[in-house]
Image 1 (cartoon, rainbow, N blue to C red):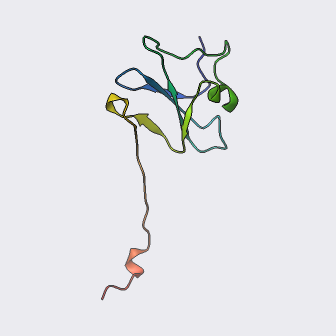
Image 2: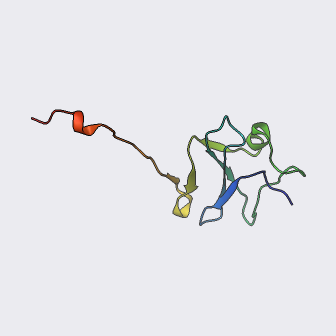
Length: 95
């Protein structure tokens, strides 16, 4: 069974959410799509060819995060990394 082209899957530890992480559904930036699962379900009901478009994901009641993220323990939220770069700090006058 094909799930999606070039995406990563992560499940919450309580098994109530699966996260699809990919940039194939957007304009090049990686996004995360959280899809709720019913009790006892490993995957949501997917199209026969897998998920290929944003409307197919939205039909699964996916919530979108504009960054790569994974479900937090106990399904209470999500975790993501934020990177900040500070360059040319030597040019700031320190008095």
